[in-house]
Amino acid sequence: GNSVTQMEGPVTLSEEAFLTINCTYTATGYPSLFWYVQYPGEGLQLLLKATKADDKGSNKGFEATYRKETTSFHLEKGSVQVSDSAVYFCALSVSGGYNKLIFGAGTRLAVHP
Amino acid sequence: NAGVTQTPKFRVLKTGQSMTLLCAQDMNHEYMYWYRQDPGMGLRLIHYSVGEGTTAKGEVPDGYNVSRLKKQNFLLGLESAAPSQTSVYFCASSYSRDRAGYTFGSGTRLTVV
Image (cartoon, rainbow over the protein chains, first blue to last red):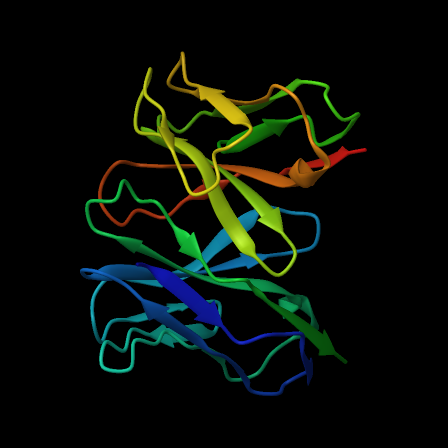
């Protein structure tokens, strides 16, 4: 079956630190991969995506590379800010599946000044 | 502003009561989805729709019913609420093209006592 596994949180960092949130997946076929972010009290927002192997998605200083050989899509940012504090979700969808997304459990990030 | 609107934002129900959650989108999206979010479990798909008049079961459909009489609206019903249905419910919509990302509503926090 299809599934997504994320590193457990919370992740606590100081401002300007380097961020990595690990995400690995299991999928039949060729999935598209997504990172969504949820700020407190809000719905999820698409942060970035990649639709094929070796693609790199990027947005707002965040990056993730679709690694087929390791079935991974790790989220990285070189210098986090307090405003990046949120919950981050990795997700996948498979072709022909009506865009149904399968989510990981989410990783809470707290950035302190 | 264009987007997905959910009503109500908060609700407390007694066990056995019924209610309907409304999701409305103004982006002319074909696909719509209902997810529930529980701590440590990410988001799980309840039901989805691929067009007006269509509905289908997701991962956790028991205890819920849905209807999509108009393209822009997707209703989620609880006929007899149970404490296990205490959750945050998110509606989302997307275009039908493959690998499209979602637009999420801001969520409904439901407590069943």
